[in-house]
Image (cartoon, rainbow, N blue to C red):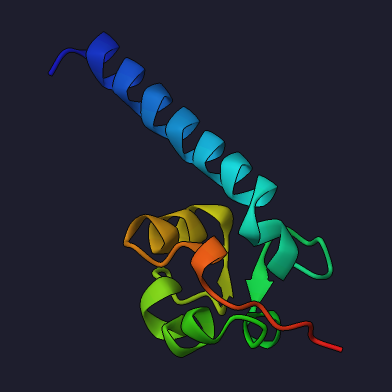
Length: 90
């Protein structure tokens, strides 16, 4: 692959990841990210039973938190936030 094509591909993939995270933040992600730190913690995930029960699979990089890209992948696999009950943490 030529250097220019690789650079364009890298930029395209990075932009796609960024926009995926932005879109996630506008939907269910923002509702679950109670402290607005840009991540869903395991404690915050308790509000969504499906998310909480699938934690190990969704936290693909095992950093102990779910970012917008991981959440978008979770929703894309058929676990749409709108179809699940989200309980308040209070």
